[in-house]
Length: 339
Ligand SMILES: *[C@@H]1O[C@H](CO)[C@@H](O)[C@H](O)[C@H]1NC(C)=O
Ligand SMILES: *[C@@H]1O[C@H](CO)[C@@H](O)[C@H](O)[C@H]1NC(C)=O
Ligand SMILES: *[C@@H]1O[C@H](CO)[C@@H](O)[C@H](O)[C@H]1NC(C)=O
Image 1 (cartoon, rainbow, N blue to C red):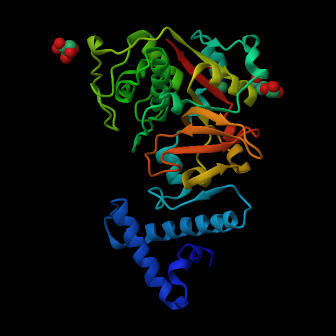
Image 2 (cartoon, rainbow, N blue to C red):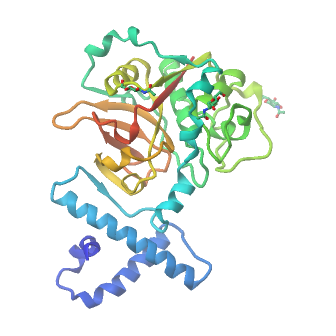
Image 3 (cartoon, protein in one colour):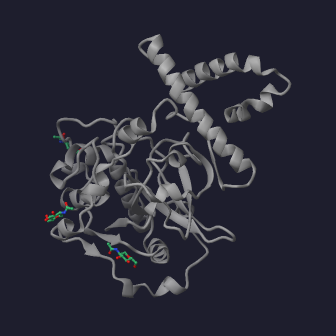
């Protein structure tokens, strides 16, 4: 019954019997909106069933939101016709948690952040938002390609470049996808941000303009050294920090690449507000995003995160996560390039 809530305002005074065609109309509208079509009626009906299940879950959550029992709102979106399993397979990268191997990575000479350096930890501002300094490029959509690791790596580097040159230059995600196999990345089948940094350290990276995103991996790497925008000196990886330490690093450094858990309905259908859902902490690390700041506000502080699922997802492509609960394992592993 709960899913009727979202249509209540329109249906006030209309009898229940007329809601079924209304839902059919909603289904048709949703398909139109997201350009969905299915090979036959059977598939259409099967997808409609999944979509309706999702709609019910979303409306049940939003009823809680309206009663003030939760701080974030959910919404139907482009992911609505997928089961949780299908969504996880298509848009999140379960391999990330297996790929992060501290023992193995140590052999690659990763530098660890020095805790002792961070005196500012006791004197942090209430707010850090690197968008205000124009260190953060516009929201992108990874599409049907598990390239989150490349989007966040490029995002972190764009931030460092903007900080140094006072100019925001969009860098090529496609360059990473096509060319960083040797660094244990897998094109559109996943990878890690600091594997991308390692590639950029050794080769450089082109701009988004000269090597644009295609949401698929090409057989051939088209990197042209003379078009490279920047080569980095190295990178740092920060593991298992407290949230306070993470705040100190983001304040000092700029946007950071972080690994999180996202194969959860609260992420998938996130619309707005501050996500606080204990279930998000019980999942595996499966997604890489860009941490661009935080706000320490009463009663609820939050982290500000840039995702790569387009602007129609979340708060125009961004999400806020509650601070102080290691929400979605945000402190698991952060990294940033050194230029
Ligand atoms: C991590 O890497 C080390 C060194 O390559 C290897 O011995 C170990 O089995 C790996 N651990 C896991 C959990 O894969
Ligand atoms: C690489 O870029 C330079 C400068 O834009 C250009 O002159 C050259 O033809 C390019 N090389 C290849 C192989 O495309
Ligand atoms: C992470 O930090 C916590 C608390 O400081 C500690 O108990 C835990 O052993 C650490 N885990 C790893 C993998 O270092």
